[in-house]
Amino acid sequence: MKKLKVKKVELRHDSDDWIYIQLDEKASKALEIWKRLAPLHKEFGLYIVVHWTRRDLPKNKLADELVEIMQLSGTGPYWKEPTSAVEIIREAREE
Image 1 (spheres, rainbow, N blue to C red):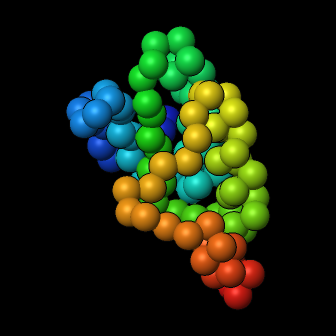
Image 2 (image 1 turned 30 degrees about the vertical axis):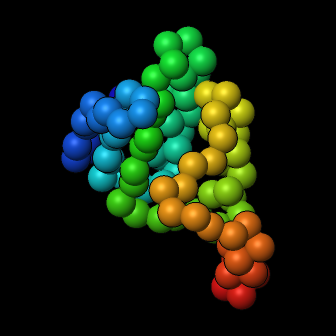
């Protein structure tokens, strides 16, 4: 069993309680871990955010993985700043 490289774990509070986990791992490995943790939101109402340090997936695969995590956890996307879905799609197409 390979040991995870955990950089930081924090319990944060704002309008909800959530756990922030920062891994020194590739996105693919971090997303695999996040998928295992995602059902905890449905069971306990606890939000979990996983951050990775190295990107190894194309944007379309990354998006698919994040959608799967949202489905497993029963949550939706969250942005702190107002954003335009049209602008996000336009930027993704340009890359």
